[in-house]
Length: 581
Image 1: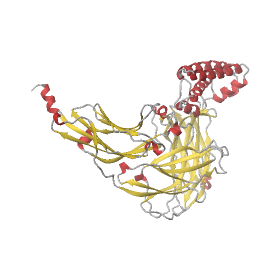
Image 2 (image 1 turned 180 degrees about the horizontal axis):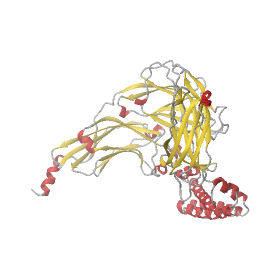
Image 3 (image 1 turned 180 degrees about the vertical axis):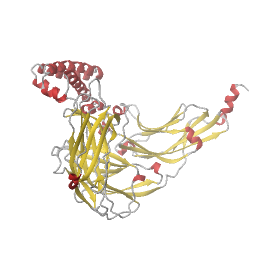
Image 4 (image 1 turned 45 degrees about the horizontal axis):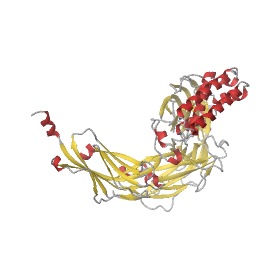
């Protein structure tokens, strides 16, 4: 036979059936939509009739699509839309199924959980995702109950046209009641004057009472400190939820950290962590010692340490009426951080970083000297801190806090601004730059393009500020920070450009502006869970290791490496262990 006959022998005919049985808490359940479902595959698109003013609903529509193989497509796209009356329809959630997998095994009703970002927290969600960097979702966006199957038919004459038909009634996946039990004892490594912790699963949430900043922490609420939950302030009421039996169907349990810097400001979420229910230990009536949760940073915030939380975390199938408090006591320890060197530190443009390393643990901070103009700084310093840690009196086990390492670049923006204000020749430059920014905003209101206006302001700022800084080359601050006029002017020009873009709501420009605090910018960070305790009767060698730094706008990009080592001991044993330098 010819090629045509061979092709006909390979042709197979199928009906694809996809049914969305139920949608719950679309958009996080915070607002009402006019939702409808679309299914796209093999060049066909089918839509269900829209519902009105809801975020949770049951569907009885099934999507039937004819398929003749071989085909190149494999992804079946399922979307839930919000029907707009005077605007274009908008996607609420979307997911994909595999046709090849459905041919081998049908999909029984299964919950698909969706996580994204809150528009109230982020503003421009699409702008945040457009960076191309990996961003961990931190907001529950709803879930869908979906089933699907593929039925083989005899020939093409037996295929039906694509259509939306009445679906079959299906049972939901089996589920059971879970009670989540959390006690919070301490928060460390985050800024603020007050904090509280929220526990949530899906739309349900419970929280602690607020805890104030410890008196032994730095008084400045804009720098990281410690917060202790006294008495029952850290006890979260049991959070009860119906949880599917299959781990793949289960929602994540989310712990969120909120803070505020003054009594007149609002609380803001600055950190979170998502935990799988399967990873949470079962409650057995015991009083377990607490452990540390290292919070993840919020994608919409810049230069805000997310902190760590000391908690006990358990799940129970039965109602727990009484819980005992862990038998722990605060004890004094001494931490030594050996900061050797860094390599391949990330930098922007032609300017090399002037790097320093800051170490923090248990609310205590120490910093190395600044090494100017190099991507491979060599510090060779030992940073010492006296810290307070929790110790279990039941098993005499210490629960060390994570050690935070942050490598900073002294970008010198503060110096540039001081020079512009102090130098006589610079007053006109600053005035001209401010005028250019004002003119740029006016041009935007008249329909000008953002990028064109920003580029014009960048050129103006770079020229005017550059002249001002160059006229004050002998300034001691510039010399001390190892920055020349060109580098400082370039940084200030970028700062002026981002000021314009941020005023238009550009979330990425807002993040870039927030990266520079006090004249320095974070290059990369690392979190170390160090738990080896030195004792006079034990032999423990100092081990130096290379650690990868994460940085960039989202804190997920490779930002270089740093070589570090640690020693932790009871404060009374400090004299028994000389510093190893």
